[in-house]
Image (cartoon, rainbow, N blue to C red; front, top):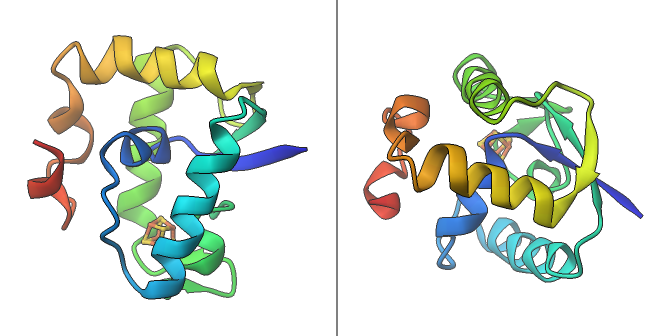
Length: 121
Ligand code: SF4
């Protein structure tokens, strides 16, 4: 099974503590965390993914903040040396995000204007 993961969700999953846009969203987020903990293959995308699937902001496959969040996705890919539609194992992607963005202190250069920013300090 390959999961579709939009690139900036590689950061969100590190900070997720059960808060989200709706009950259905947070339930799906926990499920995705469990699935990703098995280290499946993931397809990196810059559009709606398997986390967006249960989000109330997902309107027929388009995020209501699509311009903003696609910019986050592209910044994550660039900082990690990855490309849209690239496949790799989750652990490898998570390690690249950790090394190149989170540990490197670059998270706010990606998503400082996100409404959840205060949760990710
Ligand atoms: S806000 Fe947009 S990018 Fe974030 S989970 Fe919802 S649909 Fe996906």
